[in-house]
Length: 325
Image 1 (cartoon, one colour):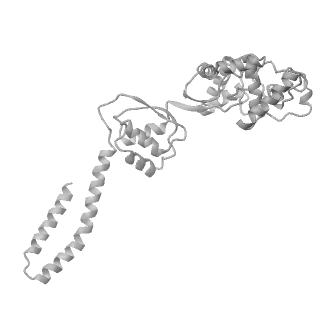
Image 2 (image 1 turned 180 degrees about the vertical axis):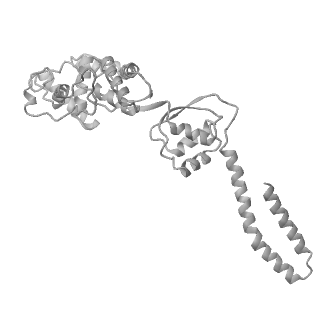
């Protein structure tokens, strides 16, 4: 600021000197030269100083004395522009423009992870971005419809970035906690802390299906002579046998007619579940990460003796084969 005042002062002194010149032509000539020589650099200096002052203020903390933490959740797929706008609305940054400029200039626009963060108003802009780049305390984990519980366990470990040893321990515990709950672990998108336990995940997925099931669904099943567990088993087969939501009612209708008629369901999905149990064995001290649980069955597979073989048996298999949505 002192330099700017010095420049302005020098400029005014020169203007005063010009006024003291009596020769009109020289006066006009000198004034024109000085305008051309002084105005551009002076304008640049003025703009630079204004930008510097704005940035110094905009990149500072909203309240340097306020250390109170507040939760800030970034949904999956949210843009840097939207994140900046929400940070300003929550009074966590002074300027969403400054935030956007900072992450763009530093090349961090796509480095911010979705999840749940703890932020405070005493963080400056650079500190705020550093916290967001370190990753959230909780991460989004998405479970697609139609996965087995082994696949749910593996997806959790990958989404939360667990190392090999932690992944193995988590997967083993997940299988223990989810025993007998296949089909009742509702697929959705959840927020979990990085150090979440398998019991917490299983309990969350299990409790969610309770909130999704309506009395009408149960009564509709009873009308067809199916208990709730049987409805879930049928839904798990339909989930694995279809590619799109539009196909589900069609396939469900076909399977219900076969059930009513006492015919075998003849679905590959139940065979895939059976073969997967035999190919991808969960052993003590190991877990079949990356196994192909849904390999296309062969003609020989259709001759296997099992209650999950719906080519040789009538009715539903004893339990669900996956977790339907």
